[in-house]
Image (cartoon, rainbow, N blue to C red):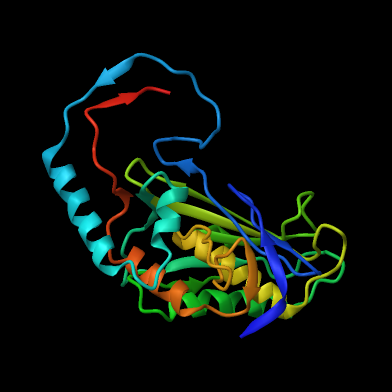
Length: 255
């Protein structure tokens, strides 16, 4: 189902912004190592390290699978955004990822239906038979993922997702913030809130933006449901290990 209203999504750790009154987006940053993603750095001495044969074999196998199975997905857009690396959660089929959704913020135009829309977004991704699924908990202290609300962002976005990863690109924690109003003050309706939540949960799972304008992970969200490309991409992602997939180098620049 498509809508003529597009949701513009931000970049980096920012999220979803609306056009014509409806927003959406999100994206990463901390590492369990601990790295903070940043645009700055200093070039130091070139260090030499040996190529790990097992690691190169793993990368070659992943590249082979990507070539065979990339049709119908936008996995290459994600690799371009992530410097040829894949990020996702560990498989946990018997232990759901616990999610807490803030129940009643004191924000003008708050609608309790928004909680149901966010739950629906999580469940739609969770229904794809991935090796990870979700369980909602009433106690924020027992949740691994927190969804909270804000009146509006100062940027033209309506959602923000942040996640942490370890050195091997496995996601270890995440949070989502959703706006009740878009930047210019217009409040979101439940349909737009669900679209934004779908986009942000996609980021939480490890997806990034795509150039496909009809996907839920487009920077400007025009759809209100997951598309076949969204589903195929996340299924491909969760059939592969996290980590870099480009060819290894024997040198790297410390920065």
